[in-house]
Length: 429
Ligand SMILES: *Cc1c(COP(=O)(O)O)cnc(C)c1O
Image 1 (cartoon, rainbow, N blue to C red):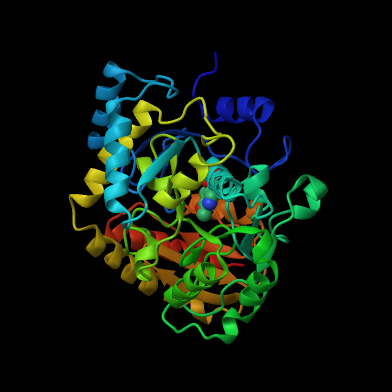
Image 2 (cartoon, protein in one colour):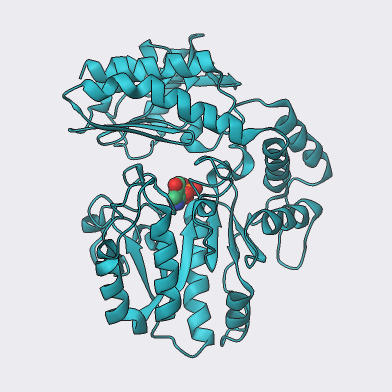
């Protein structure tokens, strides 16, 4: 039994745990968190950090929220888990109805899974089984965008940017997909036909073997934190219709208000055939994801040889997670969240602006509750991470990106501290 002192936790961790994207032994320092409340993480030595990451963009309401705590507790006393094969339960029914109602008309059916990557795998399998049902099994490839990120499982990884997505490491294990250039048209600008030339050519040449186009609408997240024009989505939808290819939107990062709309697709008023949700779905409390699809997809799959959709995770539609998601969505919608996200956008824009003048900085950009400083060179995490902790904030850069995606409940003073720390640390690089 270890006690929760800093040294014990770090020692125990280094002996037995593997952290993400890290070597088993000798990686950068990890910081022990013993509790969290609001936007603050408490470390084992009593220090508090203002959390600029919302735990990888999930904890939109902050930590230890009474409403979400209550949702978990009351569901715990009803049923914490039950298999979903042949059984259903109130939180799953209610959450599915909410998701169908909140998303655009046409996305009428919900398949629950336990993480974003699996929701993407499910979407891929839905698209492939759909074309099987239509007797076109040769349509089984996916067309994704460069700079995209869709998760870390084998199928999802095959859709990630072929360079930064580490395709070279996994060689022939990964299915070979097609890639169109990353959108260059800025969020507030038009999207020219010239910009669409390459994806149009790919669809024109390969539509006979393409099941679906997969992309992250408006914001390419972990593949580079890049924002692009809603017009691009309008044009991709038209291309998919023209070439008879399905369209999958991965809103795992953008869903539930992050870009200023409840779903990023609302910037363009475009409806995909399949929509993936995850991350902020439970307000960061429990792991849950969903793949929504249209009646057209349901019918195609039902007509396929299997006659059923062939997927079924053990912890599918976990009742604790579903109950928390319902509470999280109700909590979000019960407040003027658009105004909150707009405030965060303004404060991030103002707070990060001083970084524009640094030679080391390529670009500073904000959209909704996302603030990004893109550097010219990748940061050294071993140097940068302790600098943030010393300043009392939690910011976890990757590659050339020092960014914040704070919980929506972060107050103005904390945003100012967070952005000042980001500017300060970048100034030292
Ligand atoms: C995080 C993320 C995923 C993967 O979700 P996990 O829950 O980490 O498996 C997929 N797509 C996008 C856009 C994401 O941001």
